[in-house]
Structures are given as C-alpha cells and as structure tokens.
Amino acid sequence: MHNTVPMREQTLKTPIEFSGVGLHTGQAAMMRILPAPAGKGIVFRRLDLDNFELQADVGSVERVAYATTLMSRGVWISTVEHLLSALYALGVDNAIIELDNFEVPILDGSALPYTEAIRQTGIVQLQAPRSYIRIEKPLVLEENNKSIAIYPADSLSLEYEIGFPHPLIGHQKLEVKITPENYSTLIAPARTFGFYHEVEALQAAGLVRGGSLENAIVLTETGMLNETSLRYPDEFVRHKILDLLGDFALMGQQVLGRLTANRAGHALHTRFVATLLSSATHWSSVTLTPAEAL
Ligand SMILES: [Zn+2]
Image (tube, rainbow, N blue to C red; front, side, top):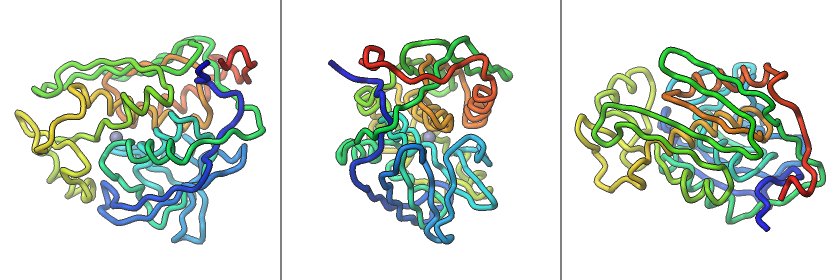
C-alpha cells in the first residue's frame, strides 16, 4: 500500500550540500541541509552571522516582490520558495538549513536538484506524531482578478490557473495531488520564468543579477531566448504550482485540503497563508490513525 500521508514527523536521513549563485543578488552561497529533531520545523541558520537562526514561517515574511524573503531582527534569507517547496512536498517537517550568505542558490531555476538530492539521501520518520491542519470549511481570498481558495479534502492538492498574452503561455491550468512521486515528476523540474523586456528595469532595482539562461526561461515578445526546449508544454503553470507550494510551506505544518489559485503571486500566496492561519474556525489540528494514513 502506498502511504502518502505519514503519521509521524520526518526529517532527512543525512545532510546534503549545494552551492551556487542567488538569482537576485548574483552572489555565491554554500548551503547545507541537516537533519533536525521533531518540533524544530524548518530553520535557516546564517553561518556568516554567528549562526543566527530564522524560522521558516509566515511571521517572518518580509518581502514578496519576485521572490519570497524572510527576515527576523534585521537578518534576511532571500528566495526561499523553491527549496521550501521541495522540502514540503517530500514531507520533510524538520531540517536546519545552513547558509553562508543571504540568498538561497537558484541552481537551475527549478526544484529538481533539491528534490533529487533529498530523495537520494532519503527521509526518516521520527517518534513524534505529525499534526495536520485539516480544512473544515472553505476560505476564499480575492484581490482584483486574482484569487486563492482552499476547500476540505483528505489530502493536499494544488490547482493553478494562469493567463498571459504570450504565444508560449496563453491560458494554462493544472491540478496536482501533492505526493513525493507526483511532485518529483510533474512539478519539481519546472523552471522560473521572466520577460526579457523587464530584465533591465529589474537589474536596476537590484533584482535578477544572477539570472541567466542556465537558471530561468527568458521570454521575448514572441518566444524565448533559451535554446533548449521547454521541459513541459505548460512548464509555466507548473512553476506557479511549485512557487505556491513553497509559499504554502510557511504554514509550518502539513495541510489536508484542496488549494486553488488563479493568477496569483508571492504577495497573495503569503497573505493567504497568514489569513488561513488566523482563521482558526476554518480548520482543525489533527493527528491521523493508521487507517487514515494509508
Ligand atoms: Zn519560482
């Protein structure tokens, strides 16, 4: 039987290591993800700032323009969403992420390198029972033409819908049940994308300084600059699911519910998480019996 919703908290079997430049700063960083005990959650540790620790929760969200940045007492961790997405999808509840700079390496612009490394090292169950947030009644957040909503369900699934007037994008919509297997094959490989005509303005604003064709799909008016092909015809909506899951990881707990988003972005994603956490009549905190977990 395929156990998709574990009963107990989990962590990594062994540490894993990455290095690379940050998408926005262009600065090199070394990162190590270490196993952690139950109850620790996901914690960033700045090795260059006396091991300052910063919890990956929605209370730490500082900036949400083009990436999700966490801050606590003046210490930043930037562009956390792809890494948090992979950890959450693969069911890693507890980990310490050591970083010697303030931006997480962008790698190839997707969550595939993280996903492969985590699955390769493996995941272990801890003693503590895992508590879930189970959605009891729908919550809808709308803003202009954008919306996010969550509905009761027995497992976590994400649906995203986007529309961009671009020949490679147009209207795209996809729903995925989040299991380690589905995430690895359907979502993790989808890369970040951006528009070439925005690059100059973004760089002037201190953004995308590490951006390149090696770590992003760069769209022109009619196509893309990358010479390789798309990883999926609808890679764009898949990356939106990847990003939404990374922001949703700031819930700090696994969720049983069906999450849907329409034309949203990091700002609405993180506002939705804060709204949901404070709307306690919409959910209950539960642990699972063996029958429910199978
Ligand atoms: Zn992204």
